[in-house]
Amino acid sequence: MNYDVEKQNIINKIKEVTTLQQLNEVRLYYVGKNGLISNLRSNIKNIPNEEKKEYGIKVNELSNCFEENYNIKKEELETLEVDKQLQKDKIDLTMPSYSFSSGSSHILEKVIEELEEFYISMGYDVVEGPEVEKDLYNFEMLNLPKGHPARDAQDTFYIKGDEWLLRSQTSPVQVRTMLENKDKTPIRIICPGKTYRRDYDDATHSHQFMQMEGLVVSKDISLSDLKGTMNLTAKKLFGEKVETRFRPSYYPFTEPSVEFDVSCFKCDGKGCNVCKNTGWITIGGAGVVHPNVLDMSGYDHNKYQGFAFGFGIERITMVKYGINDIRTFYTNDLRVTNAFNQREGE
Ligand SMILES: [Zn+2]
Image (cartoon, rainbow, N blue to C red; front, side):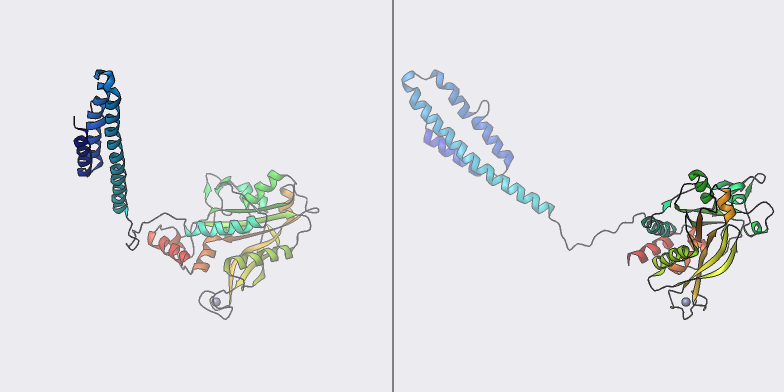
């Protein structure tokens, strides 16, 4: 064998190669199981002893020539492959992106979450209760015995007889919480949830709506604590500039009872369509917990006082977002839901 010619063959063969696969074929041809160089190596046993050394050197030279050229080519081809891949994976940052739609919370849920977060930050717990409720908790223990005229104001869905009903307010959760806590204080809770009344649905009435009530029971609680809390709530909902005012009202479960208004956040009290030109918007009702309510739930009114407040979630959301039909919330029109989300994202 002419080793110099064979060396040149190796160099030429490798030179012609353009892919890693071809290179591998050349590799098998030389150093594979039955490769040319492999065979030369195993043939050493047939070489006469005195020629073995010379033979070994020549075969090694051939092998080194192959390794050297092979490695250079391999690196070259691999770099090329990576470049090709990078070219393929190239991202065009100027291309317009695809838009995709994602789910999101309902606007009422957002308002509830916002309020929950706010009250939790003031040390309140969020408590929920059943929507199918006992007359006892929905009315009687809230100082509304059977036959009380104020019951008429809450036209109630009764479920079989007069013991069970769909709760007409979230207040029974207050009763349940007091009964569970025995006479432990302080109680500081908010109760968000659905309520039901036998109303005909129109732009401002719905047979199902959401309330959020709050109850604080402790020692030395007064109307001014309630006023402070409502002030903070109003500012949280409608901005730092708004003011609150209390007007005397009547609820059987509080004494004294008040309605609370916020100064119109839209016209700063000058008068506009949101506040019906009065400069004020009624947000909810509140008061100091009636002694009878405390006593019935196991809290001696001589030792403890409390305040309670409540408002309609739909009412607040309508005022806040300028919605004039309560049915908007319950028709599940995605265009409406998306409109709120866009407004949020602005
Ligand atoms: Zn106004």
